[in-house]
Every structure is written in C-alpha cells, then in structure tokens.
Length: 130
Image (tube, rainbow, N blue to C red; front, top):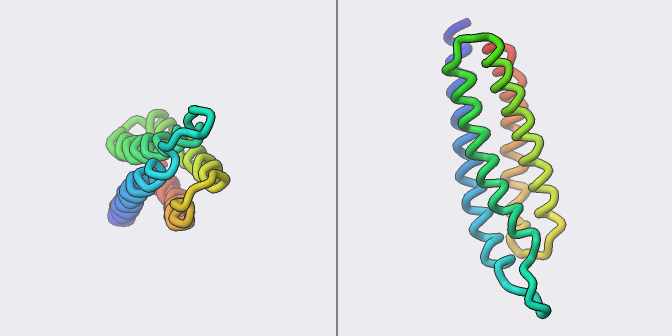
C-alpha cells in the first residue's frame, strides 16, 4: 500500500507541475492579446483570469504537497478537499477564458485535458491518502 501511495503521490505532483507550466505559458500568450486597451481606453476584464489560472495552479500544487506531508487525518482531508475546490475553480476560469476574444484560446484544450487527467489521478490519490 505504501508503494502504491508513493506512486500516486509522484504522479499527482508531476501532473500538477505540468499544469503550472501550461498555465504560465498560456497566461503569457493571453496577456499579449488582452493587454491592449479598447478604443474607449478601458482594459479587458478577462486579463485578470490569466493571473488567476497561474495562482490557482500554484495553489493546487502547494495543497497537494501539504496533504502529503501532513500526518493528521483531518488536515489531510482538509488539504485534499481544498485541492479539489481549486481544480474546480481553475476549470471555471479556463471556461471564462474560452469566451474571450483571443488567439491564445487555441491552447486551452491542452490545459483542460491535463486538468481532467489530474482529476482522475486525484480520485485514486484520495483513496490512498485518506
């Protein structure tokens, strides 16, 4: 069981790191398109979602590491639930970015696919840590 737990820990951390890398690159691509001001001088409100996906992907990784390093059951459960909530919010922000007018939204299916894989690993991981 411990060997299996270590495998899921490694796989989940690796997937979370991939999501971080993808979110950073996608955010930089979106920032190029969305940083321009409109004709009325206002900024695009969708630019804030690009920063949100980077922050949420970092928080996702941190919560997983905290859950793995904690020995108290209640804290493990709390960090596991928090990471699930963060992945949900990350997916919602990706859906918001799909609706904005940018050439970079072609890359969103990549990170969404990785997030779906993460959620599948998460289901198995929660069974091994709890």
